[in-house]
Length: 183
Length: 137
Image 1: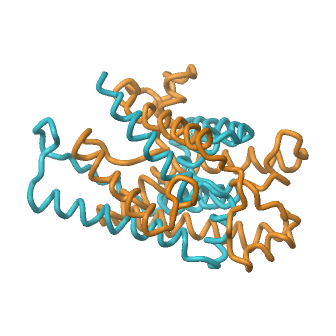
Image 2: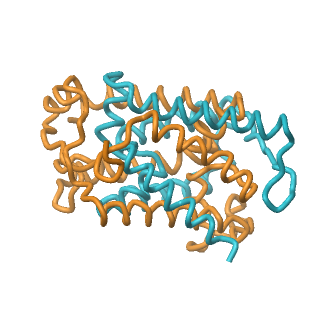
């Protein structure tokens, strides 16, 4: 297979993602975690120093902001070299389910029917609500997929396991109970 | 500039996130519908490699490149906030179809509309910071 043009299978990309755990520990003595960057952005850019939660030295965590800047840049470079607007080969069952929701365009990573600048107001509200839940929920749970699922489970941390179970409960409720009401 | 290395790590991480399609809304839907092994394979094998690496680091007391002992700080265990926050994040994860890392990657990959959920995620963090003391933990 061609590693530049074709998508990578899970058994290549998963272990590569896992390698960031020792890489960050040994080279930077840092634990993998991405959602805390949102907190550092708040502390760095907004007048929130009077709120105890944000009253800390965010400058000690700039490494995390450099990491997420790099993630943005890495995706930008990849999209520049290989066009990422291709059809994602998801399973036929998922295609059938999504078609029933009115999503039939599988080109690119996100459904153009919902995620575009000329979308409808209800879709825009869903985006805002979803983003809000991501920010609020990750801080409340103290981590996201990287910090809890990958780093936390690698550390066999019980709190992380509980959080990951919570992530899946939330995701399943949204997909199976709320999506049919929304779409 | 000691932070340059983190930009390099980030670039590599971003490339892996898009090449694995872990950033795809469609892949997250497939996962929550149990219709493909792809995302489970990615998360499962990442945890396996991460856990084995930590075991090796602890067993052989491997130091960082600059010679310090590797610091492990367990996140505080708290059933109420882990579950409640976890479920709230899960709802957002399925709705937006991406978690924080992929949000940055999608924006970088040219899906500029993702700035909307990124900004509202920052607002979500702000509101959490304001309400923290009033929430059960």
